[in-house]
Length: 216
Image (cartoon, rainbow, N blue to C red; front, side, top):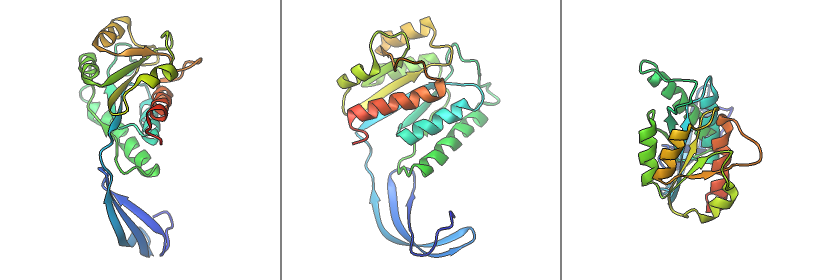
């Protein structure tokens, strides 16, 4: 248990906003006795960031999930984009989702989050289009976009749901881009360099949170 000793503070959470502030009263290998000092509940955030993350090859998807959890993203949506190299076959989707969810859980604990992000089931482009249409705002990361994300975030709402769409390493296909823009997504250029799919969502989320008070 991280070599905790009696007298040290420990916070326990159910991952849904409930927090118990505790102190260690006794420590044994693999076990702790805790005294609860107080309880409090963290309310649902008024401002939520949802990242639609294209499925990446290897363990880059888990890395993306880990980084975005540390930044503060509220929900992750794995997306089977047209240009994804990796594919989640029906017989392996549950295992792939379990890896993402495990990465999120460990990162949430490490970053001391009281509300853990949800990882939804695999989404198709039609699902993403519907999500964009229902959101309060949506941004499609595109290195060729005319407007920088840093300029667009000033116009984002300070409450509601903002959807960020991160494409695969090969970029979002033209037909997918047209559908997403028609549904309300605004293309946004992240910066002067092109980031990997595993880091773009975390960096973009940090920009959005900084502008909209999520890190205040």
